[in-house]
Length: 154
Ligand code: CO
Image 1 (tube, rainbow, N blue to C red):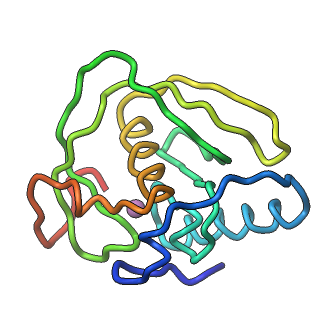
Image 2: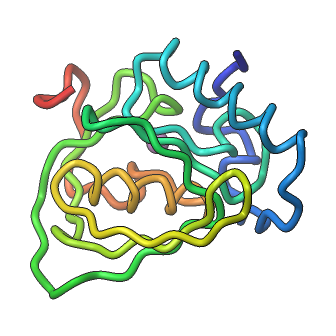
C-alpha cells in the first residue's frame, strides 16, 4: 500500500506518461494501487495520486474492480449531469461537477490487451475524474461549487 499524495504536490499537476511496457513491475504497481484503493475506501485511484506519473487508474464503482491502463474516453451523446464528487487527494472537500452521462472507455488491461466498454452513472463519472488526474487536473478546478463535509453518494 502506498501513501496518497494531496493537492499542492506538483506531481498531481503533471501530465502522466503512457504505459508502453507491460511487465512484472506494472503488475506490482497495479496490485499496490488496488490495495491502496480499498484501504482508503475509495471508488477510484489514479497512479499520480501515489506519486507515479503514469496513465493508469483503478476503479471499483460497486459493480466490480477494473484496471484501466492508458484509458481514453469519448462522450456518447451530449447529455451531462451535475453531481457531488470527492477525491482521496483532496480530503474533506466536495463539490458539484458537470460530467457526461454516458461515455465509451478505451483502455488496456495489465497484459496490454486492448479493451472497450460503455459506461454510465458512477463509472462514467469516475473515469472522467480519473482521466483528469492523468492530465494533471483536480476536480476542485472544475467544480461549480465546493463545500466541506460528506458526499451524498460516498
Ligand atoms: Co481524485
